[in-house]
Length: 573
Image (cartoon, rainbow, N blue to C red; front, side, top):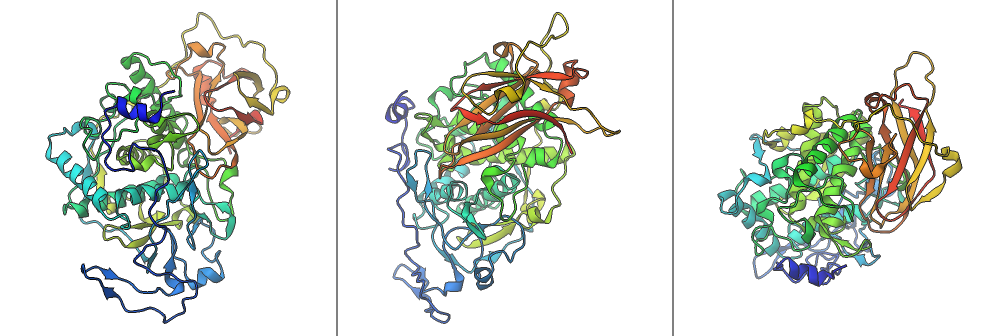
């Protein structure tokens, strides 16, 4: 494997600062804002009047203890201090303090933001709706590119203590995703915005405030971030504006040098995958989008991920929604550099992903999938109060902390944006069964009870019995991969096939390929135990296997081995 330095040279990398494209090390700014003196002994009334420094900047004095927010997040009031569960059941991060996160190689990293006080509730009420445009439509000589570049450069030039600084903004993702906070009311549990129903709304708010900061820095409230349209053929490469000029603030040298344009993205990418003809890869990608957005996203839990409430251990939930795993995770891992599987960087790992400006275009398109699922596919949002009332805190364009709830981000027009109306070709492209000369005869394979639990370090075949329906219900059958155990710090992926005796000849545009389980590297290594569910009633119908009493299930490892505790089929409740 090439060294990081060799990869940087190969891509003609020009770092934007000493922290980019050099030896990977923790961000070295102070955890606390040097302009604020915080003391655990502060008493009410100890606040000094604000003073003005020689350069004209306001310098706050000692903060009342009850007003102090140690870390980016929510309001820690005296009532919460007395009863941290006073806000009922939403899963909330504990904002009393922010601790070091960890990189996938176990190195501590300080992602904590400056201290802040007087958090205000924020409810958007835009009067003008702007259109986010597809990134591939912008040229590097356009006025739009010049505005976007100027905004990012200004963000990079801000003081490291300014929460709007580009690296500080990247650290927001790191703190929320890599163990910077614990779960409010239970300090033994880490808080996490991946792997549950928080994934879509948290990232919507994150991109929203990043966009507002860009608008503020270039004094243009008409500016909108672009979306990387990786779900359609015209956008299935890294957009030119992010890659054409190595001195541009939009460029990042820590992208996989093998995947630079004209490489077509692989939305089911695994390290070691063989590159195929671009037109074939486009065909695979469209089938993947249909499978993930339509076949496998029938319910709210399918699409958004499992509920996450106060007291829940994120490492034992049913986990991420379909879109978070595929294509979201695979766009990250395909784009980022992997020095080795234990140390991916920038887009390849959550702690560093937002250091690459393309992260925000990627997540704008993830956010766009939410709007497509609601509008074109007639999905619905959760109405559960524990989802609607969950909140986060971000710094706004004035560098002030604001508290935002999920219920206030559900209408993008109130946030002031919509998406360019571009073709969605995958709406009409479904996976098809492999051509066969005759009806499929299942090969012999053991029962799951004879195989599991086991480590998935080589392909495994099992014959799984289908349950018998009782009553007149028409519930859909779900294939459940039970008790998937792995180290959260590793990149994890395995593929799942049904009624396929030659997985090497099966591709993402074949019905026999159900999809994959994947997890990007997180900090604070811990053992995770979760399940993966696939809807198979429609699949079995397409395969002509609706009358079979058993099916063949094949699991194929594509990364670090994981432990599997069982495989079964059950009816969806």
